Length: 139
Image (tube, rainbow, N blue to C red):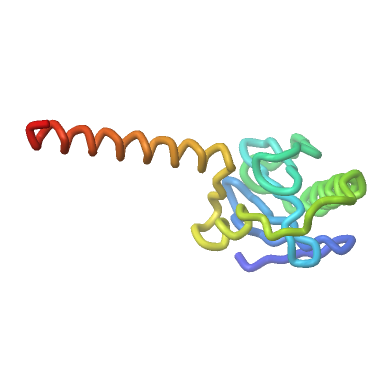
């Protein structure tokens, strides 16, 4: 699954090859896009997952592109990412935490909202544990 494609200075790295077929798009080593094909719906978000939807299409492929359509849709995705970059010349080129997460735990990259929910739930469970300890101690 070590497939990399470069188009117009944007590097597409295959992060999952089927169900979904997905790519991390990078430019100058920084993430600028997330591409995903699942259930026949292809989406491109910038600069990473759960951000601005810049392109969507309905290819023939369901969880992976048909060989004859891959270059067409990936080319359109790269054009959409390039257009997004042109509209956001002030995009800060900091390393995306989602790109780091994808490299550490595979294809799942949590959004900021997901991480906030995890923190709140962890805090709530922590408080419940403290109360239970207090009640158990006869408090």
